[in-house]
Amino acid sequence: MDPHGGTGAPSVGPLEQALHAARALVLADLVAREVAEADVVSLVEESVTHRRWWVEQWPEGAGFLAGLVAQDVQDALLERYGRWPLCPVCGSGDPHALEVQPELGPDPHWVCHKAGVKVAAVGALGRATGGAADS
Image (cartoon, rainbow, N blue to C red):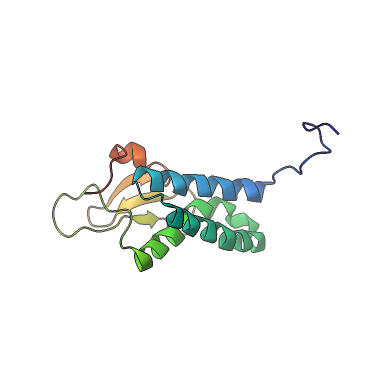
């Protein structure tokens, strides 16, 4: 049997590719903000499992997975640990989390609702903030 031929492992379909891409983008943001501990990565896996069922029911929503997984992880982190990711734009006032916009749509970004600015695309927090952790 040829390990590189068509008789080996099944190919990864578009839904799995979209799930893997969403996972990678959210993990990149967690790493950039230095919160990618094992228990936090488990939250990503829980979201991906849940969203796999969701996108199987609505395949047209595959382009929305990155934003949805980011929101799922953000909500789970809020319940267990606190706000994430903290806004790197606002230097004064109470610390607040960035929001994913659009809530259900393609090309999701982390946005500061107070300043009304896009901070970074989901998956690009490290480039937008220099990869430094929130103080």
